[in-house]
Length: 191
Image (cartoon, rainbow, N blue to C red):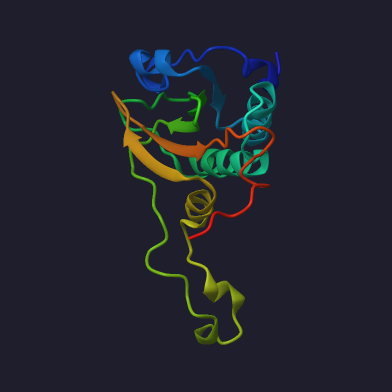
């Protein structure tokens, strides 16, 4: 079974299960997968799942935006998450949970890992181009760029600790329920 086929299976990692069962029952649609962070196609499988969810559920939201947010969050988990001591398994693979929930007006994306360390956003403001003295790398902070991208694309981003350890990062995307429109092609609202 390849990683894409695994996407269709329910999550089996209890401590990485998305949210509580009571909240799951209120979502109109739900899809989740547990990925292994060491698998070479984990990020690609998560992006593909995002695109498939939007297509299968015919959600009026930018597939590019959702796929990029999922990719950034999964990439952060792959590169930065270190399992909490009580979740670490010698020789065991690190797991990443990816879940999608849809309600009539929102799509929620959850990416959970086994590290309870809060995600880090860029410290301070981006630098003034005039102060970089011709060094473009001075314009961007050393870390947190991925989360800055996620914050700019999603309507809301937050994180929460998990029981008995780890964390989940959530994104909410508003769905434009007007016939035949999506967030990318509707006219900007007047201020």
